[in-house]
Image (cartoon, rainbow, N blue to C red; front, side, top):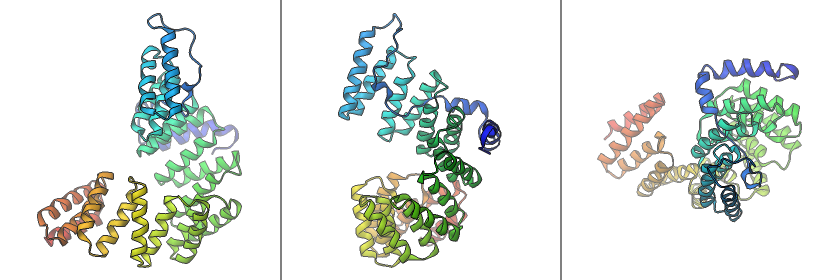
Length: 380
């Protein structure tokens, strides 16, 4: 589909069939307008022809100050300064893309989307802008529109490996395994030594529960890219899903040597201890991660599970309240908060938490979740 001269046909056929069914063309066009990848406004490339309504010297000074703030890592002041510059030169796409980049560096992806859209409304033929927009949309969880942005980036630059990788990732999230496989093939064709392409294919096999194929494929990939942590994590995951805990733990230990501070590795190691009922060791790791990374829902969820298993219901209440602040639209923390309240005989609070969990389960059409919430409500 991605081969040779039929690349254009792929974009129009694949884009139409995969994306138009979910978004009208007009909505896509509206969503797509904006993006960038690096703070290109940090360069001195300022347009020579400036409107008479503002002073070129003032603009240059704002850009200089903005660069200084970026160099110092003071992104908030840099953003404020570049916004002043944008008000003077509102046709400069690089300024808006630079603001977007700074927002993305702080994890403010919704704001980044807005400014990338503004940049693309000025320069709609910039492939890097579309790529960065796709990246920001993907980080907000808007996978449909992220895929659209990546498609546009690829259409403008068919040789963009990073755009195919981004596309492959969001297609995996959408369970479009055929599309992800096509993205994988294109990356391999462009860059045969890119381990991220093998990670896409390995993830696809895992998500399709083709565990034997995943183990074989990822084992070969790890041999080829022995220093790649993500591939070892995927191989460990495949072993763990097969129930081969020791083989999974061996891969995680090797990955940990390569990257001792990687929280994904630590979480998987903690999960193995948890499955092996070594709860104290698992809790120790989960707590350490939650202290180091206050925004890790996996770590808080692990702490909560073990607190419930050890009958530490008061501790579980505190943990699940913290977790709800991180993921307020996820029904699971509310459900387990209800469990903890019930065990503490705080019936009214348990009922409130469980009713909220049930409502969210209903929104996600999770019949199993609705059933277990109803069962627990019936025990109050």
